[in-house]
Structures are given as C-alpha cells and as structure tokens.
Amino acid sequence: MKKQISILMAAVLMAGTLAGCGSKEAAPETTTAAPTTEATTEATTAEETTTEAETTAAAGGLKTGMAIVSSMESSKDAGEKDGNAQVDSTVAAVVVDADGKIVKCVLDVAQNKMAFTAEGKVIMKDEFKTKQELKEEYNMKPASGIGKEWYEQAAAMEEFVIGKTAAEVKGIAVDEDNKPTDADLAAGCTMAVGDFIEAISQAAESAADLGTQEGDKLGLGVVTVMNEHTKDATADAEGQCEAYSTYVATTTGADGKITASIIDCTQGVIKFDATGKITSDLTTGVKTKKQKGEEYGMRAASGIGKEWFEQAAAMEEFMIGKTADEVKGIAVDEDNKPTDADLTAGCTMSIGDFQECVVKAAATAK
Image 1 (cartoon, rainbow, N blue to C red):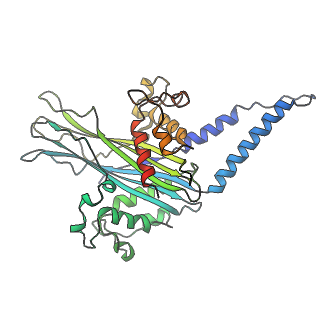
Image 2 (tube, helix red, strand yellow):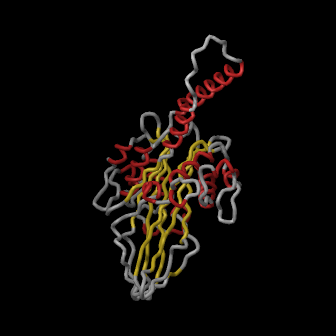
Image 3 (cartoon, rainbow, N blue to C red):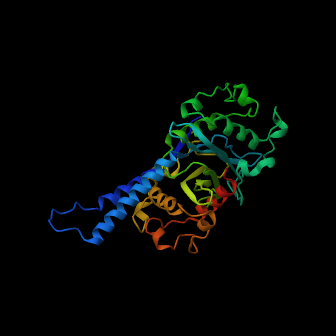
C-alpha cells in the first residue's frame, strides 16, 4: 500500500524567529565613550531573556512530533449499492526524551467514509467522528478475540511503545496481516498495527524541541468536514468527494497553558464519473498541506505573501502560553479568519477548525 506520511515540524519557524531576533542586533561601534544607562539596560535585558529561554529549553529536554499516514484504497465504485469514497488517516502524536525514547504517545484514526450514487450524486454527511471519538460505537469488541474495543487496543499500543525509540518501534514484530506477534502487545492489541508503527516512528524521528516540559500532558484533536469542493458528477465533468481533515497536537502544563503545538491538514479527494465509477488513482496516497510546502500554492493568493505552512506556523506560535479556552476565544470574522493584529501579521487564513481541534486536544490530554 502506498502511503504518504506527513512529518510535521513547527520548530523551523521557532528557530527562524530566534535567529531573526539575533540578527537585528548590530555590532557595537568602537568608541571611548561610556555606554549609556539605557543601552546597558537593553543589552542586559536581551541577554537575560536569551539565557532564560535557553535554560527553559534545556530544562525540558523533551521533543514533540506528529505524523500522519493516509490511504484511499478502501474506496469502492457505486453499483447496486452506493459507492464509498474513503480516506483513512492514522495520526500519531508523541513526546520523546533526550535519548529519543518515547515518553508519551497518542493515537487516532480518521476513517472518513463519503457515499455517492450510481448516478454520480454525492450523499452529504455533516459529522465525522474519529475512532477514538466513536468509542463503543465503533463496535470492534464483538469481533475481537480478546474482547476489546478499538480505543482499548489503541491504548495498549500507546502504552507498549513507551520507552522505545523510533528504531525499536519499527522493529515491532508483526505477521503477514500486520498484526502483532509479540505476546505482551497481543495481550491488549490484536488488530493490524502497520500504520501505527509507521506513524509513531515517523513522529518520533521528526520530533522537535517546541517547548514541551517534564510533566506536560499530550493531547490530539481531529476535525473533518466535507467542504465546498465536494460536488456531483455530470455528463461533462467528474464529481468528487473531499474529506478535509485538520489535526492539532498540543502539550499543556499544569496550568492548562499550551507549551507546544503542531498543526496540519489533509485533503483526501476521490473523483468519480456520472455512472458512479471511481476515476482517481487510489494508490497515490494523500499529502498533507505541510508536506506539499510551496506546492500548495497559497502564497500567490495571500494578502501577506505567506504560504500555508508559514501561516500555520504563525498560528502554532501564537497559541503558546494560552489555554484552550483562550485559543477558542481568539477573535475571528464571519469567515473564521483572525482579526487580532498580532496574529494576522503572520496568519490570515481561516482558523476555525484549528480552534476546535485545540479544544478537543485539551479535553483528551493525558
């Protein structure tokens, strides 16, 4: 199965911001005059600020990462039954220590199923729940040989990878169906774990120092909608179903304030004709917006000349130090675009789904 894996890092912007601040300081001119009190105070303050930031980062010694593995290969043509445009996205968020060992892990799957008829008409859907949100509704327990629901088996996988490095996660033994053969893991998880292994290992490998501290909680929120790009097929044009999923991972301190955040989105598009036959290549996988980088093409249409990943990074940074309620309360206009001047300097795109994801992440953080 060909999959696209998103490796999600916000550290680039943060590093760039720190570097930018440093570059603004001009070299002092050679002079015999004594420095002014104001200049001395400014220099001392800047030095203290830098030292404090470095000390805080060093004290944490923890890195945060998130990765997404997506597939559209479960989609089916319409016939006697409605067609199924399906985008399965497995997301893993992790915190790793200085040795690269996982200390926290959260897993979820956005299994987005969108129906269309043999006449190429889309059957709209208003709500998409992740497997974690479905809980008992997912109904895996009756078919489980160990009598456990999906979220319970996912929890066993999350626990099993604690203390492991990315390489050790990659080495978890599985059979031909990607089901675990390790007795300790199989006691709590017997479902296929191939996508978990890929997402967890990639998240651990890409983890960056974003500000997570010892004792912080890790949360993950996912929101999916069928957006305006979803349309019926006609005799002259293909129809398509689009699952637009937003993912936000956050770490929060004891005071509930965000210490690190990672944002990304996937747009899984499946096209079909007026007879309900799928025309998309389902083996291509789904790139995330961050993975697309400049290819996404927002810069040309942006009033501030910034690409999507740059605007997402600005939002990630803006959320640091805020609680979920404060993020939820960020002022937006009727299009869910921010109106706060500090935020709009770096992000002018709609942030409504980001805000909703942060609230979900806070509610489930552990």
